[in-house]
Length: 378
Ligand code: SF4
Image 1 (tube, helix red, strand yellow):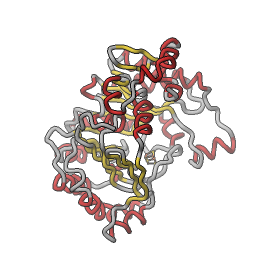
Image 2 (spheres, protein in one colour):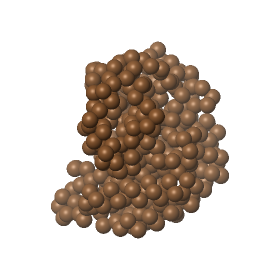
Image 3 (cartoon, protein in one colour):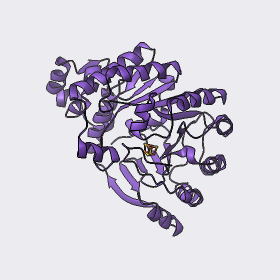
Image 4 (cartoon, rainbow, N blue to C red):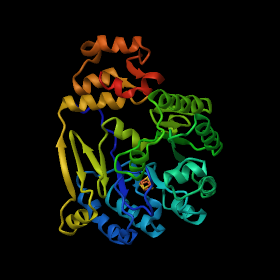
């Protein structure tokens, strides 16, 4: 793979603790919050272990898990450790995920003063019945108050996460949540279709007694409704699940994952990527802590990707974005002339209204994004 131009990497820090487990979740997180202090003491060792490899980051993202379970002093300690070890430009995007049940105006004001300039709020729904079904700890009122508090604390870049397609959820109920969400005037929204994962409480419940799941056509209808509604409200639909009030408000951090910009992930189960290498940490907190205790990076596995694998990934990820794939850049980076090598198939998908070829880019249409997995067969 040729290095066309390498933007600064992104830093992800996983906070693997949750007060309770949501019914649909299969992320790595632990409910024994008494382990948080030990984790906060260990993290600086992992930060230090990458000082020479990643000298600078222009995005930092504290995700989870539930970072808002941390005390303000713990967040500050993490950020100070990062800023002492790496060069962080003044205009870096620094995001933290917040559960609306946790921090109030006082904490959010302190957070803003530490330099955090973007919040990602796990709102998920603005219907109390749906929130209870999902096992969330907050109510719709708390979510709305939390956004108000964040504004009062001085946050000018707020993203909210929402989930649609719950079993039995009528599309009108989803539209009501969208209407209320837009009234909060977030700069960014991430809207995900609910996935029922095996082994989760929801997966087990649906397996035992059955759930009224949506058909593929209904799922597409939710997706199209989301895009049309939010575009009508002035948001740019820039990636399958992501909407921003202009591209200046698109997540700078997440965009790195989609275009093979290097990133470092710290904490249990976090993944990292650089050049053609991908590696990931232990999911077990005790293995993670034990490695750091003994002076080892807590890496559980690593893979080297071939240029063909990277090219496939770039295709899959690029066709999830409305910017699409820059054909010249793709050619110079992966040595593949897509039009020459996949021309007939691209034409066929364009004929079906799933892709557009324009101005040196291949872009998915809205109908194409709704069936993005089929586009990946390109
Ligand atoms: S708060 Fe997030 S990470 Fe924690 S259980 Fe719920 S969905 Fe999973």
